Length: 279
Image 1 (tube, rainbow, N blue to C red):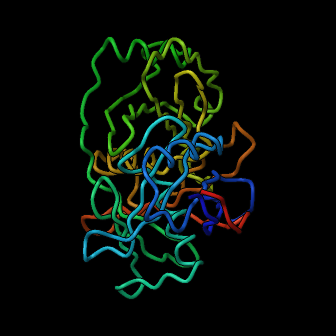
Image 2 (image 1 turned 30 degrees about the vertical axis):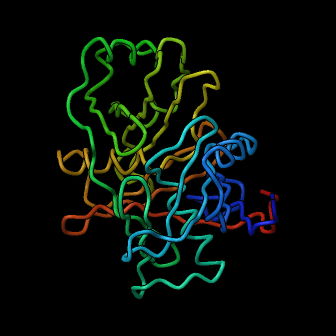
């Protein structure tokens, strides 16, 4: 029988409510099946909804299942930060002081406090490297750019199947008017540098084609993959701030910091709705 369950709607990658990327979080989902989770995620009409369950790994603090409106992801970035934020606000106490360990389809993901923000350790890429020319031709057409405007590209798969594209400038990123039909099924993330001396280092946009083609407001998984790609290839410094959502009237801010073998992806979160949901 359905029952009322603790629920939060969290705005992620923004300290200001309604300027980031919203996430629905069901905090007590241990007895829900995937069909119910998928139906609810579709009903919310948000990019993702998450469901928190008891962990199966003794090192984890909780387990999360992450659903878009049409599928389940093994990992996603803003659902990771938003779920950890909601779990802590609901009284969760980590096993390790200062570090939350999340269990998800991609394995264990560490989330730490970074000042007033939370940050997750970017999980390893399950696919990386060059993108085939036919796919790049579709990407260029989908971005309405000449092929030579794509300075570099790489697969950046850590959950969603992102193709990362580097452009010459942040302004070129902001000027894109995507043709989703030309992208076919390809999920495309685009990044370009702001001028030297700017508060923000890079501008990011991500495009998700399909029946409900959309631009994602702020994307943790893509920023995690892009940081691994750009820092390790020397195209980005070890610490930088990325902006995303500008073209949508949002003010997402993604804090990137490399420390040893880890790259941490951080941002503020704020709970905008708290209460109960019937599931």
